[in-house]
Figure (cartoon, protein in one colour):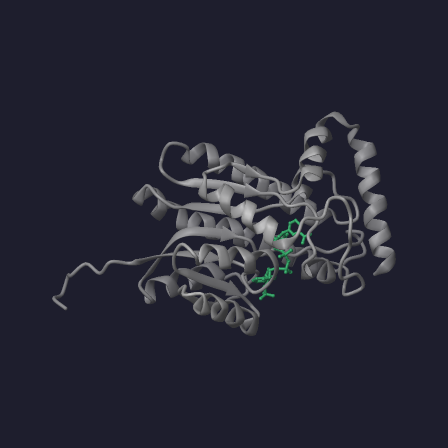
Length: 269
Ligand SMILES: NC(=O)c1ccc[n+]([C@@H]2O[C@H](COP(=O)([O-])OP(=O)(O)OC[C@H]3O[C@@H](n4cnc5c(N)ncnc54)[C@H](OP(=O)(O)O)[C@@H]3O)[C@@H](O)[C@H]2O)c1
């Protein structure tokens, strides 16, 4: 190759937390439209998703990465450059949360939640956004939660991280409007994934309520909304109603209701 030749970079969709749950489903959908880079810590889980994508005729690679590590984002950017890829779309999905009282849960675990849900998601968005804007294409899908709109006693730090993500998405949406880049916030209600099991230390693996929506439906609605350039997607009618009514309900009563629900979960923990 002549020196100074310009090598075209391959546009990829980068998906954090692609090894299970909502991220896995989003990865399968994204791979129907283009190449994907799967991120997470669980190599076997990521490899399984990559195999499923390959079997369906798609193209996927993986990078084992702990999003709560301080050097996670530079390592991801270096990996993209080394392999001739550029992040065309980012799915900020990796997230953890812990059920319990803030003063009783381990501070380190709660700070790992902030590092992953807030710091990692923000740093990755800031690292890839300028490239997207320079190309006038692409977008960021942030996986928030209905928790981002509600008081969260009994899971306080997690709810606060999702409120942050909501604010981040809203701000970025305005800043990039008309510049060819999409910003979407996906706010699921409860979904039966490994999330709850992790959040309750293994005591509770699944629940069934009016608010629950299946993982594939959450991912499908989120992905379609993102591709269509919607600012906000809330899967499930019951969840949409709650968020519509929440601003008119007394905030303290809402907080007390949520506290009771989280306390019951903690009782199982
Ligand atoms: N399930 C729900 O009820 C619910 C409701 C609303 C919003 N959400 C949000 O949906 C997103 C996905 O959660 P999920 O429900 O699909 O749960 P999940 O199955 O537990 O998936 C979480 C993903 O995050 C990744 N992750 C966790 N810690 C990580 C770390 N330190 N570094 C890198 N990746 C890490 C996990 O990958 P590894 O284990 O491979 O690291 C996994 O792929 C989260 O942001 C969550 O807050 C979930």
